[in-house]
Amino acid sequence: MSIKTILVYLTHPHVEAWNFRPGHKALLESRVPGLKVEVCLNSKDFKDCLPQSEAVMVWFFKERWLESASRLKLIATPAAGKDWIEIEAGEGLQVSFGGFHGSLIAESVVGAMLYFLKAFPLSAAMQKQKKWARVKISEKLQSLYKSRVTILGFGKIGNVIAERLKPFGCVITGIKKNPTPAPAYFSDSDRILTFENWQSVFAETDHLICTLPGEVNGILQAKHFNALPKSCYFYNVGRGNVCQESNLVEALKAGEIAGAYLDVFEEEPLPESSDLWETENVLIQPHLSAVSPQYLELFVEELAEKINTGEFGA
Image 1 (cartoon, rainbow, N blue to C red):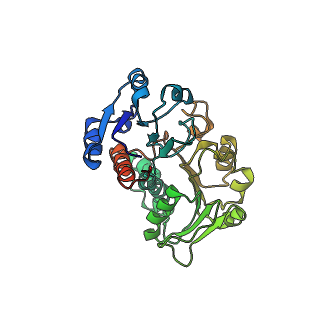
Image 2 (image 1 turned 90 degrees about the vertical axis):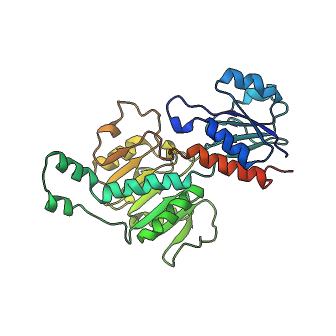
Image 3 (image 1 turned 120 degrees about the horizontal axis):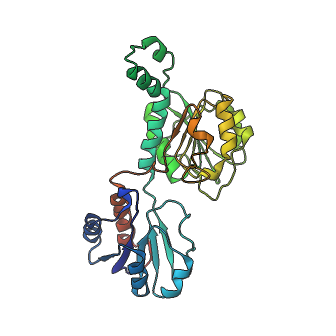
């Protein structure tokens, strides 16, 4: 597929990093010789231009729009999941999702791990009280060194998180649908399991990180949280429907797990009535674990490489 022009409709009312700016346009055109980038700032202009477009960059795309897009050959989105693209790739039409999120999400996960292990909330509380609480804080401090990390959903994002954790001395267990060879950064103590025997590792997990997509619904149940050590921390940067909120709240309140970092939720925005807001040892982030000022820059670089290497066909 020869892409000469691409129509861009990437705007977001709340997150500045998710808005396509002139600098992104200049970067993409510089990376793909001869490419013309046309930018739309609202849905009306986008739908008006769609009938003449062969390629688009969007946050979401509705199936009914295809009726007026007979020339369309490529839909590219920065999003990692399929939640906002209502159509599947087919003959003559390709759909490309972002694959650059891993390094950004890994920063958030590692930050959350250190937030818990280094007792930063307690230090902040003691700081407000002007207390040199050396004994009290020291009793809470832990380390990532030799910690046993289980990553539920060992795809692109899970793999990058694991690679970032290895220099800390973590022992990695990746769980995925189909077995694959171990990454080069794995040591003898690291392993990859499939979902046939995934629950066997729970009892020896210090950190359970979930990166599963939205297609996996309710896989984590109350019995799974109960099977984890009481000292285990849970991190969810996949999709919120991986478990029922009530089961997670109960596990936290009952002390079945030590804490949770949650970036995604069953219902978003998280309702003010949710018990998670007032549950101890919960760190809530409003679905922003991959956000950084470089977000769309990374996407543009990735898409340019796909175009230049002919990933979308001749």
